[in-house]
Length: 537
Image (cartoon, rainbow, N blue to C red; front, side, top):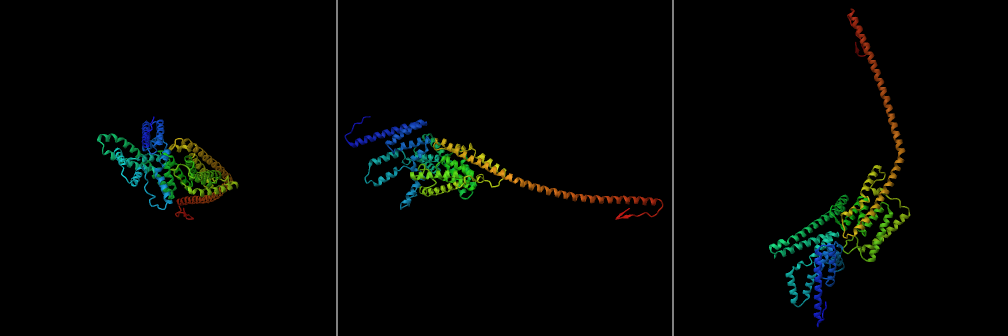
């Protein structure tokens, strides 16, 4: 395109401005048609066109909306959050709190977060500072109000950013954004439908209703997850660790997929509940899952290091502490916490130097303990949750349960219920989960072998003593039986002697009775009366 140089500079500036606007409109129109095709390659091409349009006009609202929509279709949620990070409520509140703490007047530091475009505020400030009346500005405002409701500008940020926050695990922000966007969209739809005819209203009312239903389903799922998480945290704070574990298990073992960051947070808090309940193996497994999803999680590394130290597994504890030290040094070097700005952190930047000193001190102490020979004294009873001196059946039962729960093949099953913010992270997460699960399984097998050897040795030592006790018991039973038999024999002899005497007495009395009868028959009038010890004949 050949452009002749006009005589006046103002006309040249106006001509170039109109040319840039035409180019931007052309890019936006082409990008909109490519996005409507819903093909991955076309959407990627649309993003390139929109980048070119934003290079010419960085504040073009249509180009920004289309780019955010295209990134959302491609599931590039991190880029959406980076693009609109100034409108995330939690990040905005954090920045407001930090700025209010440094300023003297903090009365307005916790005002409501304004998520829409700041064009209205800039226009208001320009109107207040302007002293003359501009007809062109008034004309532009009237035409914009007739073409499109001004309150609808920037509403796309609520819905698009809310969906991105939901997929990134920022559930509280997602619920606030989606509810606000749905409410504003419904209000704008009602205002626009006033001037529609009946035919146009029924024809165009299906698409907003379908989109609204999808937003409602997403909001209801977010509310369910937040309700269970709140109940689990409340149970943990009340000391009901089993109840807290049950609520967290409903989240991580549910049928619907859970965002990666939210799932990592739930595993982290369930690991703390397992630790408080004394279930060391399950706590270590949840720490492994959390670190598979988020390798730079400082709190989980500290928790797993303390768990390994509790069972005297000093080498693994030293490994985690060294990793923590490297993370803290990198934070101090880069002067920022790991991850993007919108990512929630469990520690503050001001806490890093003190934590680094305590970690260095603990590393030195553990190295001294390893040098003194405490490396082989692993408390496998605490790992299995058994008492010392347990029976062989108890050990076998506990080993069977732990083996079934922490098999290396099952260590990656949680990935099926995880919704990754970036599809490329799935392979790396699966590899980390498999490696950490294999290490825990080997630790359980070593513990079972060591404890079974101890149980068998105790049984071998107790066998002579148990045999002696058994022999003594048998001897006592035999002696008691012999005494009983003698007593029974004596009693039987006495009873037999008494029966013999009674039989003899009976026979004698019978014979005397017969003799007396015979004598009476021969003529003796007086029968013979025989009495013997109370017996009469």
